[in-house]
Length: 205
Length: 124
Figure 1 (tube, rainbow over the protein chains, first blue to last red):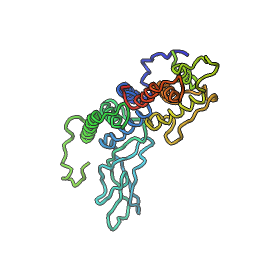
Figure 2: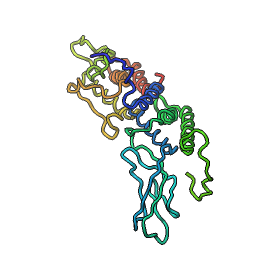
Figure 3: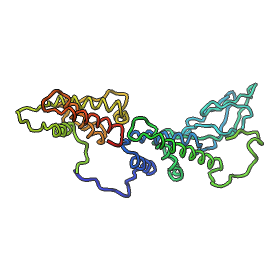
Figure 4: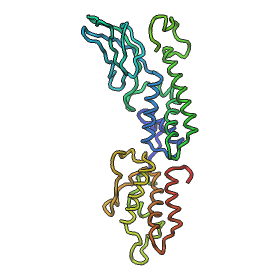
């Protein structure tokens, strides 16, 4: 059988960010198997998006006459809404998690209602097209999230509650930082100045 | 250099080499292929209990595969290669537990312990 040749240009595969993540984990954690690496990486990415609300989108919604609720899911084939962060256009409403808004005005208002909603998205699977910034800016955070899950597993060659604790802390800090950046309109400095959220009667995102 | 996974037949040969049962001096093998493959099936059940992640690729909600000889001689070793030497140790250890004038009971216990240690710890 021919000996495989090291291919420097293509060794990271179709998704270089994911392959880099797998390489980092498998080179660091003794005796870990690729299927379990994929599971923890996916769990870490999902939790990252869920905690940080890193991917946010504004959606325009319309409620035709007689309709009292709008469901924003599915967002598209690769992404689903995991949080409704802000709603414009309704004075009294209720959010039914994860992505349904319900007009609770009583008596119900006839006519068409329109508005906007700020939502946070998470990917539906590891095959989704992640935004390039995920592995550029938050690589270490996702790595921490995967490592803490691996080290936390019982009765494995790589079990280590101490390391799990350290990486879990780093992961949570990274998620908080990502959330802060998203709240600042993806700038790393101070965000646009505006009235405090409570001054305009809105809910905190 | 070999880059393919070893076969079941190869694994039994490796186990026989440690058991010193390769060349039939007396005309017949001390351990039949059926005995050794039974030991390997037991090893798979042990791996399934202690390292379920080893079975993720083939599925966790199915029965542990069972191999028979000689039908599965050319089948590939079903787990990741890091488990190959551990399974060889287990087959040898389990075989030497048998009441046999040539068997070394102390070595059998050592190999079975090495199998468990190798599954659960880095140091082995």
